[in-house]
Image 1 (tube, one colour):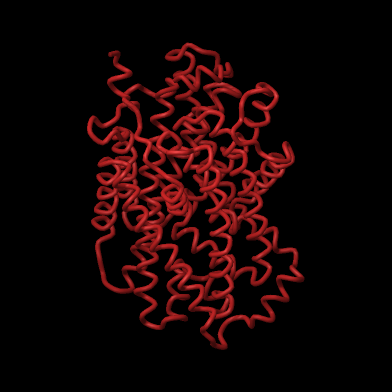
Image 2: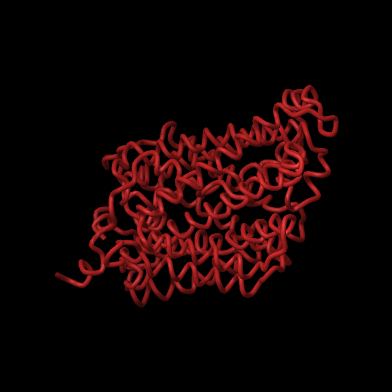
Length: 460
């Protein structure tokens, strides 16, 4: 038995449609998603529903692209696999590391800070202690097996989704004179003003990251049917949930209160439930934060695991735990990066928004690359078997590229912040590009843009 066989006996195929759907919900919904929806509602009123619909369409485009690519090359490496086959290992490494590792770290930190802000309204606590306990609890849960992760994630994500829907329906039945009258909300929706396009970015963040469930493709029982269905179903469910919560927020809370606080979900909870709203929003905050962190620890290490199989990272990332068959080295590396970020930032929010937007902007670039991957592979492998085929090719991909490009260019509300975001994105990409250049040229001994044969990529 060779070293590779010893290191990687294989991931366990245990995830059905329900588990994949729940995991997808946990990946996508976060406190930052809810905050983005509520602040967008405050900024745009009924017009914001048009922005949500545009964001939903853009999300459907990239879900369709990822569905085809994932089932063509059913490997845990996801974008690193697709890009290596279409345009080479150099851009594959850049797209994978800059678009997923950095956003995982800074997104987790943002979630923990928001949770701490909500906790502070109930009782004082140490941010560092709370953050480290949560991070390392979910580190261990993910190491202890995909079965345990799926069970815990099901409870967390189900509670989170139910809480969101309860807030929405309870808000429908609550009446006050502080928000915008429903008739005015409907009027703004039917006759939107030009601000709708400036709101697309706020609406798009909550629809980012459905594709990360593709990193579980080697652990899915029936990936051909269940991976696309999990993503599309989750996207439709969240369109309903986000729209419901946005409507309730417009109806019950003055617009300026939604836009001038870091925790508008707490303001909404108190408007609906009074003082008990703190407990409801605490439940929402805990479940969204824990769900986001847990799935981050599950997906990113599997991306690193897949990259190692393609020789894009050191082989130690291929190592699976001998008992639980989880990529424990990658999990520990991600946990360590997040721990360092917590200790460096502590409770300071200075510059955090910029870093989160920077990481999210790298996400958008990854989506653009993925749409290009599909267009290249359709031409390069026209007759290759495809279990799922993206409809209306290449219109869907062109719409996706244009939407993501617009969101990237308009990634922040002020020119100064936008410039800083562009600089950070350049730094993220530059650092990974330096690593990718030396790794591909001198370790892999390949051309930077030399595509990998599709069969070789699958065998790896």
